[in-house]
Image (cartoon, rainbow, N blue to C red; front, side, top):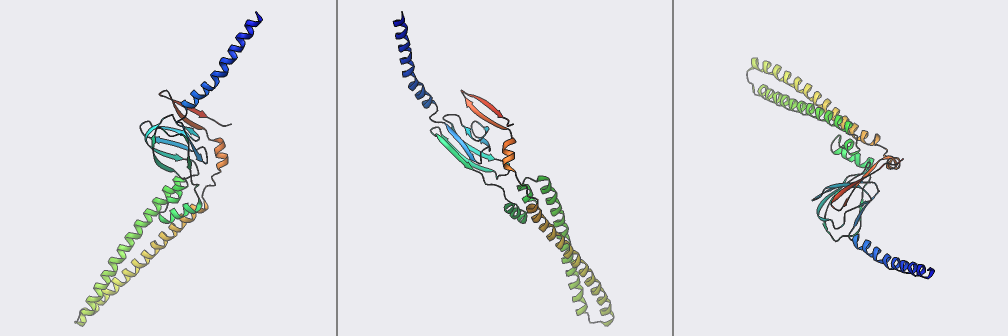
Length: 248
């Protein structure tokens, strides 16, 4: 009786021994065309747009044998958005790496110099960006209007001066002198008004630049990475499984 039990035990152990490599080979065969997307830094949100659109957080394991052209967008708080287009042949495997560039004060300042408010939008201070952009646009309109008024006043003065210089009759020359003098004073007022708006425009432009640098967010990335919840999506047998990770 004991001999039969021992024989059965040996047969059972032998079956398991030979089955383990087979199971491992099947698992390896099943996952041989799996791509894992990793980012530097990790924890980036990925958006895949293609035949099957989905989202996930790095590191993200894509479904096996993914095929087709996909537009991939990677975003992370405190880093610049990264976009790329990739054609999956279905035979890819291994690791796909993405590197995100951190946002900096210098880049924000340069953007504000190009267009006021852009640096604030870049650093995710959208309300400040909207307010400053609208104010700059309004000031720019007043500056343009004042320039056009000055240009018109200057032309009027030059025409009046020409009439005065060309007048031969003494009685009319005094009259046209008064007209030219009046046009000159209006041109002077328009010039001062235009200069004032130019100074306001330049000062506001400088303020935009300094604001984008001085009030640039600190982006405490370490604390943020530890507290933000993560959502990932994975495909399995034609269905999508969503995973929510909430750190404590």
